[in-house]
Image (tube, one colour):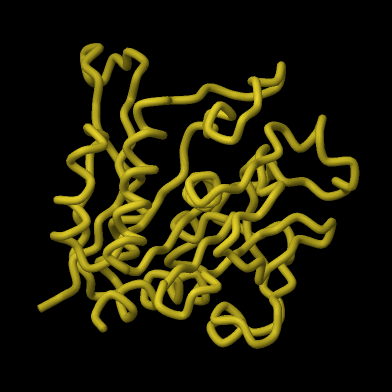
Length: 241
């Protein structure tokens, strides 16, 4: 049987003529296709009550945390800055419960962009609310103007990491984020950095936890970028174990 991969869903909060103003639960199709191409079965998990998280995690073999809104700074003890974007507290609450349960049940995790950030916050870390105003060393474009299917900057990968075994010492990635990891949570180990020093990838320090979390968006770079398929294949392989 193919591993069942739970993909966190988002919710369209603004009225869109195509849906006659009806709110829609969704996930970007790249995540679905990435899991399917890796011979996994995707299951989109809609935003729900935190107390339902345990049931979802029990039924899936792996969890894919997707991108989206900014994470509320209330979860790491800060007030919202003037430059933070829209947050979605219901999604934050639910996804933090999913992460908690995935860790408790030791289910493999792949976290992408916001997924990396909510994982870090749930485990006790914090974020830069807005890089342009809070990160003094920023010297490359982290919200790229180029189409997202193309890579625009490099990531240096730490030797000995799971990520290094997967992609080697350096890879080119796309970039669409104005927030990033500030204090890395205990239990997570940075394994990839941007040229200006931002944490771009983390893994679990506990060998019993199977976690790979990345700041870029592999789902928008497939099928053209073959190395981006590796992240979905790797999650499905970890889930199959």
